[in-house]
Image (cartoon, rainbow, N blue to C red; front, side, top):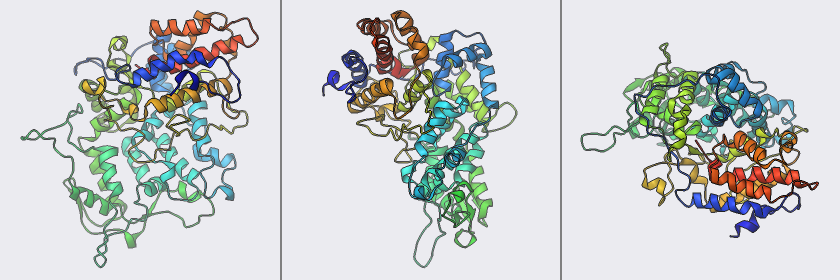
Length: 560
């Protein structure tokens, strides 16, 4: 591998001296080799109070909050949080309706033509457009967090009109992101894409003659990945152990088999495959293939089958004590920090269990608890060597696009599938190949200071030398040329190009919430200073260098 030569290898020849990216690449590779970028939480006790930061915030505090609550900060967003405060901004975002659903955007832009019946055409632009351009940024960020947890990947959806089936699934998450987690469980259970992805669509009751049994895939993953986890948990997320010191299992194989009996008979509401319309409709129960006998699970039994049995199963899971800490911890990981303390998990779990008005599963209460907690908002966390998380690659792209006003004049939003680990991000929204997501919540890179410290770092599961080089190369082309007609508007930042300090400070603020170390800032300034500001192309090259080196640095990649 030749980092200096690889970075900036753009065939068009447009841009600036790519060799300036080599120092940053070396830093990133060092971090990925173990310990340069750590994740986790600051030492915070279980009794520490939830903190709501009131206005006025500093620009740094505002940008840091937006790094957790949106797909990327803008100058306007930073000022909005300063004006409204965290609590006011959250209230505004909760009240903001979706402008356009993914489904409607696909319809409005003509993707429902016969030529697309067996294709995925339109799905990627629909996703990228919303994440980057829509103002309901809290919904976008929470939606992506839910998609990391309640995974469906378009390549595993065995239906025609895949783009519409997947759009309907993503819309179900986005539409319910500020509702109740129990509603979310209903939405995914009766969704065609989920039914196909986890193979319970058309699931049939047991056949005594052939010995065939109901498919158990959804029953298992619903409990293991979406709601309860494998082991019984305390309210703070710690694992319960038996008298022998071994973790107590949450459920047994018999519970999986029992719930699988409930999820039989669910089918598409229409047999018309000439249009995608049926994928927007909830699944319906087919009595002839539904198990109407007794189904026992998690200490509960139901008989008679039908949607009543489904409701009993979901209600039972929703009432289980594991769901609050299990879901709360993973949402904290996706939004704030990979290793939340027991106290942090406990406080959010309490909000999940009761929003203060006797309501369980209130997503607004959970989101507020996550984003206003002392471990999310306190500036003292910044001094901790174990706080924060590795930025998901998708949020790096959207962060750049939002910070610098990227648009697609043709509405094509031709960013495409960014899953490639050799030429792109190694991650693309809605394109996980398995239900286990691109990365597992408990993953830690082996033989590193992270694993030695007992910390997890989920996003490192898709991070290695190859993906780092691919990311920097792809980022270089994106910054310089955009992709298709998706291009940034550097007009405002170019006004600072001649003033290195002002340029680097602005990029540091909007992209990294001023979390670049003094040494990193000095390195970036030196690289920018090496580029003349007086030539015709100099100002743009200086801007390009400041952005790329910032986004390639461990200080940016590890967000606190």
